[in-house]
Length: 80
Image (tube, rainbow, N blue to C red; front, side, top):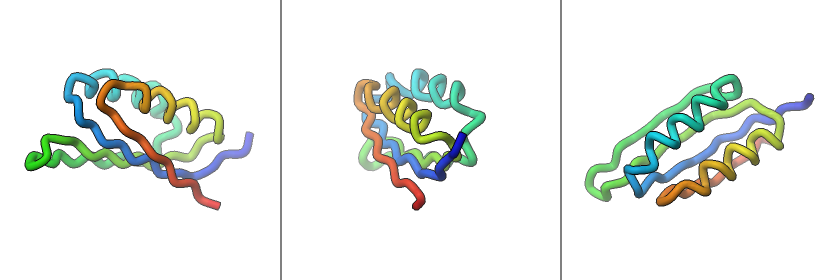
């Protein structure tokens, strides 16, 4: 199956969603190239970047699950 490289940007505004987010990302660990998380204390948010190499439907499924969490926003940028 063809894969695509993508970067998923996640903003977490509800800290109660972090455990569920981490569990969800763990389920997709085989597709994750790398992950960087930054707490931004002045705004009381967390910023997370995930680099992925996965089939497009897997990336879309992960994005949908993450975006449905309370207080979590997600966007994706795909390679060509």
